[in-house]
Amino acid sequence: MRRALTGWGRTAPTVATVVEPADERDISLACEREPALIARGLGRSYGDAAQLAGGTVLDGRALAHLGELDTASGEVTVGAGCSIDELLERYVPSGHFVPVTPGTRQVTVGGAIAADVHGKNHHRDGAFCSHLASLRLVTPSGAITCSPEERAEVFWGTAGAMGLTGVVTEARLRLTAIETDRLLVDTDRLDDLDAVMAAMTSSGDAAYKYSVAWIDCMATGARLGRAVLTRANHARSDDLPERLRGVPLRAPRASPLRVPLVAPGGLLNALSVRAFNEVWFRRAPRHREGELVGIGSFFHPLDWVRDWNLLYGPRGVVQYQLAVPDDGGGAIRRCVELLSASGVPSFLGVLKRFGPADPGPMSFPIEGWTLALDMPVGPERLPEVLDELDAIVVDAGGRVYLAKDARLNPARLREMYPALDEFQALRRRLDPDDVLRSDLSVRLGLD
Image (cartoon, rainbow, N blue to C red; front, side, top):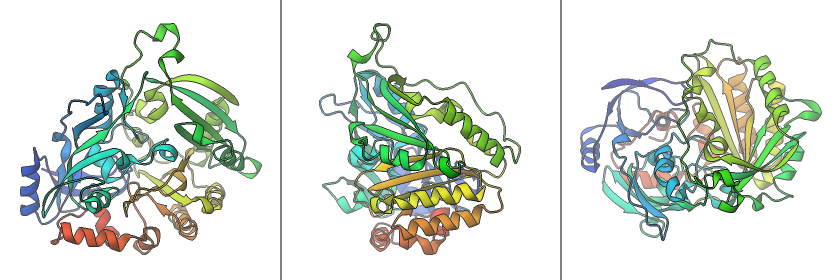
């Protein structure tokens, strides 16, 4: 079936033939038959990583089997087409949580591997692929089972490779044991960027499994980068009030709310976003400890409104996420100063700490800081601001997240990912005829 596809940002639609393989044999036949293809899950990468103009896109949702949990080890084998939402629905009632989740649970396991997704606990637990015992990969050269111990170069080369080493079909995942479906959350409202960065370092994010700060990137002057910092640990059974102890483990519920149509252009402008950020900042408590919060509310607040990306209007949204090492922490301030002075509207940015990087040559996280920014397409200065952000990031020895990229200058890619040649050599071994391609790989000159 021919379909127009975009990423979650809705910025660069292209048309491809979409097929739905039922198993590895179907994928292998597609690799033999099609001149170019790429896998796709739920389409939550913001840019063009899961689409291919004029080519074939493999919709992997049929590969969605859920295995039996080994309660002793916490390991389970699941299909790459399973979503994190489906994992939570199946395994939370038995006392297990996914080891890493991004800001939405509408992401497949295959997509989580392709992007080596990270969450609010990277400073403690690393990225998604660090919690895999093994994965199964179909390449144009054949099917491979790999792990951190067996064929490690393929395993880690696939982490963050955006589907360009092969089609992931299943993975063995180590889940996290939990006693309840709640978290104990501490919240602090901080008046500027220096205060929140100090709180995330000197006072010890290490005491919390999860930590995230929402940054006001429209604030100026003494309020620059003011923030709401939330940190949390899983609540134990004894932390629950009596009324909740009878049902301590429930999966997050789906939201009935949905954005019904694309919002008018210009709805999200500097004035409206500044007003929203003001309300978001003021509604947070100055300091609160031990609030019991459910899994869905803490990890996936945006999932409460389905199709929320339509709010950004007909031209879509760019999400820009950067990572810089600890000694490049000053780059975070320069990025926030640039955005604040530019007038380009940005909803509250997301600031987190990263722990040590995965060995994967294309995995995004590096030890230090990460900042994610949402910006509606439309402001005249947006392309210039994004290029200036790139320059700050490169100067600091950092990189941008390819799972969210829609416009990076190819000349910057090698500066941001110094192990690119190693990755390309692996691709040539696994895919000598260059079958695995995407709009992203073509745009960045990876083919």
